[in-house]
Image (cartoon, rainbow, N blue to C red; front, side):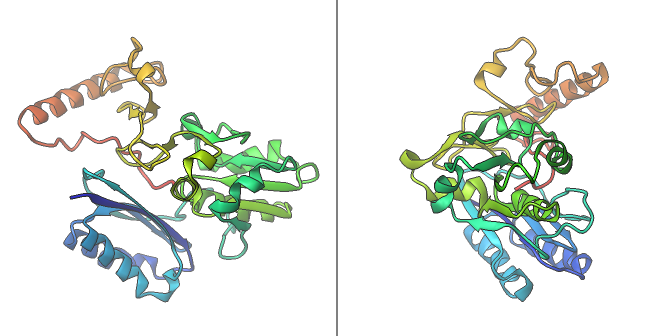
Length: 310
């Protein structure tokens, strides 16, 4: 039986978000749902997986609260459970930008449906910006999109201040994995004086789901924050693995490198890790292999980047 995976978010005023944690966690655990959900005063952001009935129960739970009306939701499927536990976390922001007062609830850019996205980014007067992190951009992006080379979303505002002049660039189009980061980025851009700001509704995942491959302007695969690592245009698990040392996506070529040690390091991080870290990771990998030999799942055997970045 296929596992249903949903990525969802919604910006809305949640003054009682702390009180929502316990009932939401209890529901997910009772339904066998696993993954991670973030709650903050600005809304909810989550990626979880479970049975069809379990996921439908969670969707119904949100549907009973009018504040979540119209929340963004993407579904995909896998034959295996991509998460190993269920967590509901309380945060200051459901996607961390670190700029006080920026909220899509107050103002937001123009949503562009996937069917119209090709026209927008093909306009030579439009500056297309990828709001994702550098390791995500490395495995796939839209044609002609600018890579800000950010390691975290917190760096995005500084990138805009230093590189994008509102007097020079009149039309801005942005995208991210599932829509949440570019929605908040568009609110920030408007607060900085940019007048014409567009963003891809539903993000790359909705684009791949909607636009036929033969018409697609997407190049490569799309990084996702679970142990599938990347998805291809058919929203199936892609060709990348993930380094247990740094959590970056790694290609088949990366795995041929002498700096790749399964469960320990890869060409991207072997210089960054201390000997103490490498030793710890080596021991963790040994325990994982021992557990597999016994037909068990070791808690360290996961390829999940913490947090929801959709």
